Length: 148
Image (cartoon, rainbow, N blue to C red; front, side, top):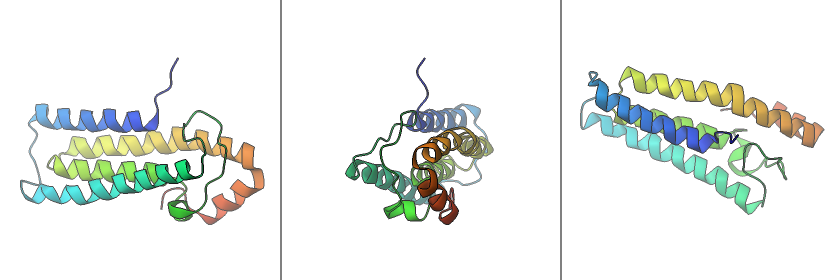
């Protein structure tokens, strides 16, 4: 059975957010053009996620969630967050929620994403990192926060 990768979950929830907002006809707290402020966090979040991905590529390490990591990446954006790609996705979803007019359902979907990532993906990944990199990961974990 294939496992749902975090970027796929991100895209599925963004699509869900858009469709629910469109179909529900729920009142929009932020009307056009004020809702366009959502482009800022959307772009900032995507930039953060891509920056983390590119750092993995430069280090020639595995980026696939369910495969063993090759290298413990602790520099670049990873100096500020142990999970900058997930943080970027969450910030992007917040921006998308603003773009949809800040409908409550959009923020609920964003919160669901954060909880799933935190309790399932990050927990799984950090167990693997600790098993593979032992004291190096424990030191990094003590120094750098999980999110921000």
